[in-house]
Structure formats: structure tokens, C-alpha cells
Image (cartoon, helix red, strand yellow):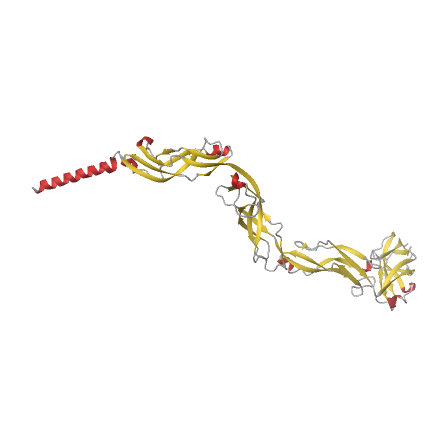
Amino acid sequence: MKSKIWSAVLSLLIAFAGWLYVITVVNPNSEAEYYNIPVVFTNESALSDRGLMITSGKDATVDLRLSGNRQDLNLLNSSNITVQANLSGIYETGPARLTYSIFYPGDLPNTAFEVLSQTPQRLELTVERRLTKTIPVVVEYTGSLPDPGHYLCDKETPILSDQTVEVTGPTSVVDLLEQAVIQIDTTDHTETFTDTYPITLCDAQGEPVSSELVRPSITEVDATLNIRMVKEVPLRLVVNPGGGATSETSAITIEPERIMVAGSAAVLEDLNEIVLGTIDLGTLNGQPRLELAITPPDGVENLSGTAMAQVSISFPNLLTKNFRVTDFIHQNLPEGLEAEIVTKELTVTVRGPKEVMERMKDTDMTAVLDLSNAQPGTYSARVNFVFGSGFEGVGVVSSYGYYSVAVTVRELNPDETGPEGG
């Protein structure tokens, strides 16, 4: 009796399982709903070729209610159902209504399911003319330098990796764009630096214009900002004594006396002056005025705008006079040679302290030729001057730095003995 009862129970369980399988897996009249299926737009290139673009409705999704075999419905989900809309039929701007097609995954044919409902029935799109425009990159600065009086920031000419940006998008938005702004913070910077900055698309007033539909050719710009140290340095002239004058007995003025320069801190920290050049006072007569170039070291810029310095030199406590020299001698003539000084008189300019110059006469000077390197012939030889006792502090002035006289050198006959002086 018990075995019959267990047989009956088993039969009922098998029947129930079969019924459950049929209604849950095989039942051809099952239904299912699928939500937020994204729409895939095809042939967008055809729209682009016509200078058009979708400005709204591009993110459309579709909800479906399908009927079919339960086993087949169980293979579907919102991510493997494909909804496609073809854009090739759009030729004008304005609102557009599109139908769409539904595709199922794997080997499931479209006939396997019946679409009971689809929302929306048609896709509502907005089409605008596409515009491409080139706008400049504009730099805005924030912050401040740590010590504006000692640093120069070249905000007018930053070095940018890109000077312009090409933007593409709907005409209604692109028409508003006039500049791509980057912001550079100069706070605590004391030397030249480079960084990368994101761009912000803005209108003519610098207000950001936000639109996901605009595509810039670049999204960031590399910028180098030149920051240099500023320093005031004096101009100096190197003075070699000569012609009875020294830097202490000369009055030297330089205009300008100092100039502002800019450069790296490493260079300017050791720069304490700019040397205009070297002057030999023995070559200057009267009260000369010189114009000398201001040449800063490499890497240093002259900010003064003055390229030339005006130098005035005078000798307020010195007297300059001309003397007629007739006393000539030569020395150090090589053996076997004789010399004759052709020049018999030489006018020489001499400068020195007033009280000394006032008592000096022509005969207080002797012209001396050093002929240690002499060879036979007639030529000009440099001459030095020797002053008599009591004429300290005087010197010869010559624009060439020296005087010369004509001398003839001859070989001696073997039985002749050369003179010791001329």
C-alpha cells in the first residue's frame, strides 16, 4: 500500500516539473521587458559630409516589451539587444524623426520575437549646421611674484606650444567662442618655468562656454613663462695711467652711471658692474668725449634702452704743453752696425702737474731710441723720452700711444768701429 502511495507522489512531482519546465522555459507565449537600450547611430559620416551634426537626441534610449519562447527571452538583456538608427536620410537642419531597427544577439532571428511595445516609437532629434573655427590661445595670470621690484615677468610674450585652437561643433555654440583661455599662476616663481595647462573655451568677454558637442583640436597647452631677476649695476671704465695722468688726477664722468639689467639669478648675483672698455690716458689730449657701447654679459639684458654710454674725461689739475725736442740718442745698437738718426727735431706733447710744466723747457727732454733689434736700412723707429731731474709726474701724450723718428742703419767696414751714440 505504501509503495503505491510513493509511486503516486513521484508521478505528481514529475508532472509538476514538466509543467513548470513548459511554462518557464518552453512556453511560446512568454513576455519580457527591457529598459534603457542605447541607440546606435549609423552613417554619421554622411551627415558630417553634409556639414550637419546631431545636437540633441544623440543619447536616446529605447524600452521594449517582447513576447516569445521563454528560453529565448532568457538569453536577452538590455546590453545585448542592439537598436540602430540610420542618419543617411537627413539633409536639413531642424527637428528630425527617425525610425530604428532592432537586432538580437547570437543566432536568434528577428522572427523569434514579437515586439509588443517600443518606447519611443520614433526618435526625436535636432540637427544643426556644423562649424569649424580657429580661435587664439589667451593667457590669464593669477597670483603675484614674491618681490616684483627685483623680478621681471615677461607676461606679454609667453612661449606657447600652440598659439591657436581649432574648434568644431554646432554653429550656435561655435559662433560664441572667441578664445581658448589658460590660467598661469605665478605665485612664488622666481625663475623661468614650463608647465602644461588645460584650455577653457570662452566667449569674447572671457566667460566660459560649456558644450559637450564642441570638439577642440587640443585640450591643453604647454607654456613657458620667462621670469628673470632685475638688478641695477654701475658702468665702469678701466683706466690705464699715461701721459702724466692717472685715474686719481683725471675727472671721468659716465652717462648713464648705472643701468637696470635682467637675467637669471645665478648670473646676476655675481654681476656687480659692467665694464665699458679700457682707456690709455696717454692717448688722450684735451677734454675728450667718447661714446662706448654698453655690452652686458651673455644671458643679461639691458633694460635701460640705452645702448651707448657717453664718457667725458678731463684733467683739471694738469697742464698740457708742446715741446721741441732736438736731443736724440740711440742705445743697444748691435755690434758691426752704425746708426744715423735722420729726424733732427720732433714736436712732443707733454702733460703733468701745473707747477712742474710751467718750469719745463725743451732742453729738459731727451729722445732715446732702442736699436737692439736694428737691421741695415732706413725706417721709422719708436722713441721713448727721458726727462731731466725734478720733472717727476709728467708724461708724453700721443693719440697713437708713442712717437717715432726716422733712422738709417748701416753695416760697418771691418776696420771701422761704430759710435756709441748719435
